Each structure stands twice: as structure tokens, then as C-alpha cells.
Image: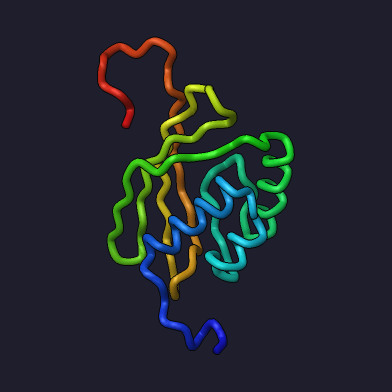
Length: 131
């Protein structure tokens, strides 16, 4: 069965698979193959556009930051859009960053991405967490 004959997976399942495969297991090629469409539009100004730009950027990133990982805190979907609130760590023990990602999917594959990142302060102005 080729990909065009398969029933698209739930958008949240696709995004969770992508995040876990790429950002926790650092299997960039595998995550792209399984979860990303033939075109990929990137809105993060620090990451090159397109599938190959993403691949090159994150392969190098994980060579430089081999302990990078994330924890998904919550996930919402609306049609072909999935929003993820997550905690990103560059290495174990760091405070990390709060991240909001938005993914757009077509035919069960990620084709577009936006994100906003906020470092977690050492001394917050209140006792609420960012999660």
C-alpha cells in the first residue's frame, strides 16, 4: 500500500510521533520520513525553510546538543492544526524553555510550523509555573 492509499492518522498522533522521534530520540530522518509532507514551510526564523533545511539544521543541532529533549505538557487540535505547549531542555538539569508550537497538516503529514519560545527565569515574579 502506498502513502496515498493509507488513511491519514489523527493529527495529534502525527505531531506527537514527530516530536518524540525527532526531539527525544534525535532520529531526524525517521521523523521526517514518517511525519512530514513533501513540502515543509518553516516560520521559525532560526531554522531554514523546507524539509532539507530542517534535516540539516537539526542533525547539526543534536550533534552540538546531544542531550536535548522535551516534555509535552498539553496538546490541542482544530482540524488540521495542532498546538503543543511543551517544556524544552537543552541538557538534563537546566531550567529549559516554555515553547508553544503550531503545526499545520495536510493528508496526515506536517507541512507547516510556527513556534514561540520563552526561557524559564531563575526567579519568577510569581509562584505559578509556566506549565
